Length: 255
Ligand SMILES: O=C(O)CCC(=O)C(=O)O
Image (tube, rainbow, N blue to C red; front, side, top):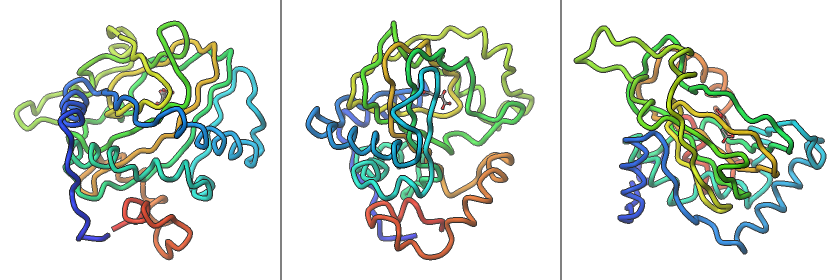
């Protein structure tokens, strides 16, 4: 890890994004990309899926490509170390060099049923607060009638261990199913910043829904199950990083 890497400055707009994400579990970095910047990203995204044998999309199917296959597509890779996204991740995780432990794409081809209510936290275990963060750069508009991401503001906090609440229990799936979900409206070029533990879902999808996504984490203490879950990826990342674009390397490397 390059210890000389600086924590980046946040604009006041992005400071508000950090505060909202910490409070609600989800915040939006609006218009990270303009229409002309989106164009080559969409082209590469579609090419990657063709190159990986996924075709142009099958109705009802969610395709996901992850790992080193994505590294050969420079417009996609640049998003994983985008300075605004990294600055927000640094601030939320309190981590100068967040570890991009998952780099991925996601594509839902309509008509798709969406995604059920769930948390990406570990059911049955509390975790130290704010150790993980996900970002998703949307390539298509989504709205309250097609593909909206819905969530329960503040629900991530119920998954965090608290020293003053030694008897705190992690939420059950039944509680997650009965939360008050609200939609996030998004335009292509916006970025969802999501604390993975927040309860979320996706409503039925009637238009193509594509995004480029990464999961970052701190290099400090994690929940026991997450510590176990990343062992294989940590081992895979040791060694030469010559195949990793330079801007991404510090965030890709294990320490
Ligand atoms: O597609 C989305 O916006 C969210 C997907 C999801 O629920 C997840 O990856 O946990």
